[in-house]
Length: 198
Image (cartoon, rainbow, N blue to C red; front, side, top):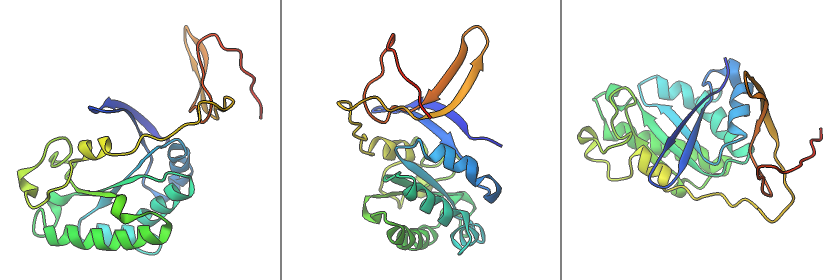
């Protein structure tokens, strides 16, 4: 199991989604994906039992939030997913319970919960993903797509020497070996001569 990448555009940003596995056995893969992120989108299972398992002492919701902060991802969006499967469906009370408990934990980790968008969604039904859902008419905040546009663009020091940690290397037929990473400082341009170091 590896991380998966998807690209899309919002009205403000070009986004690359790095989908990290949610299972404990794949934490190493999750760290690989998270280390490149400017913003974490924490997907929370809102169902009875699902949320409780994720937020428990050894739960993946807790572990992923802690790892995101530890790896330097200072912006976060929390999606309360599976709102179509809460009891009753699209329960405002369940959403508020989750927001309260997750906010408390995120504050302990180091995040400011007041700066985190909590978006009730249903990935299966598409509620509040791109367009506002009438099933969640009690919710007045942004959709997931709108929340992505509200994140602050990270400041990258372009006046410093080039630093581009390599994430992976691909061999692409007809092109050759392609190193992949993210520019942390400086600027890279076509034709530049660069030096690689361990």
